[in-house]
Amino acid sequence: MASEERAAPEVTPSRPTRPVPLWRNRSYLLLWSGQAISSIGGEASHLAFPLLILAVTHSPAQAGFAGALRALAYLLLGLPAGALIDRWDRKRTMMICDAGRALALGSIPLALATNSLTMAQIYLVSVIEGSLFVFFGLAEFSALPHVVEKSQLPAATAQNEVTSGVVTFIGPALGGALFGVARALPFLVDAVSYAASVFSLSWIRLPFQEERVRKPASLRADIREGITWLWREPVIRSLMLLHSGLILSYEGMLLLVLVIAEHQHASPLVIGLMFGISGVGSILGALLGAQVHKRLQLGQILVAAFWLFALLWPLYAIAPSPLALGVVLAAFWVVDETYDVAQISYRQTLIPDAVRGRVIGAFRLVAFTCEALSTGLTGLLLQRFGALTTIAVFECALVALAIAATLNRSLRLARPIADL
Image: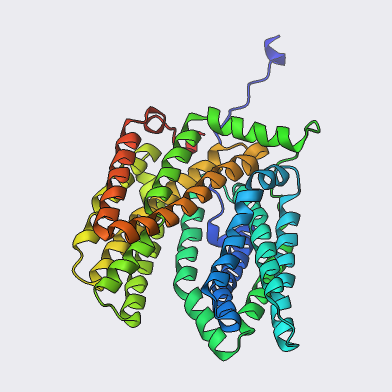
């Protein structure tokens, strides 16, 4: 009956809620601040390691071997670590890793205080620190999308990159100053910084992964699943191939710039100023990255970045002074950091949480392999053919990468982060 009919309630469309700003996001601030502190300590001890080995043994070869042990950890553990990160509780893993790094680094001041430090201990600490770094880095990358909203990932990535640039700028200087006061001091500061990271992580209440409901599988099957997902996803596969080619082309850039600066008879003070100028470019690029990401699509950013890399690279051959080299290097880092903000935040958004650790483990394994190859290849080319030929070889590679990025249909059609 009409008298019994009720009018349908008027529905008011709900407005989408705006995410909490990053500077008011308690979980993000705890994560970011803890990692900023531990990164400063890590950069300080990273410089102090070769200084300590040289002071103890006077052997550059042994200093290089200790660094190689740390890098070797990623080549050996990258794939299984990614699979395990997708199984384990990520926050607990990060806390255990940083607690382990605090104990490992803290053993060096103790050994120095008791005059019992040996090269075997230094090598062991390098292996432990490098191995735990692999697990921590994969867990941290996979955790960020659970701490901030999807739309905030470019801004959060940009802030992390700015922090990384500042840390890279001041960390080595701090490490050198601390080592000059006392050999044990950089390692003690690093151990305390890792303890601070554990403390900050313990205050975060959010889970760092989705609830997992999965059938038990072998580690090999898990690794295969991550690699298969990476290769079958056209955008991530294209990013991996282009990014690895880019690293192979320019990872030896610092060695190239150092050789050119030495040929220009630059003093250590001038070389330090040159790299200081380049550090400013890194910070500016990270700040610019989030803004560019709001206005351009992923494919547009990548194509522009690769052509700018190819255009900037030949300027190393005509830079008339070390300071001019620093300006070119700074411009290069502006482009590189803008590119990093775009591709890192896109990977964090697109890769499903269930396979994120495995996919990024495989992605980084290829990148780290190219990094090692690039440094060695750059050294060989410089020694055998000189700087100009080295620049020409890598310029050809960068132009080829720029053409490949331009013609890549998957990148051109990549959806905006908001639509993923």
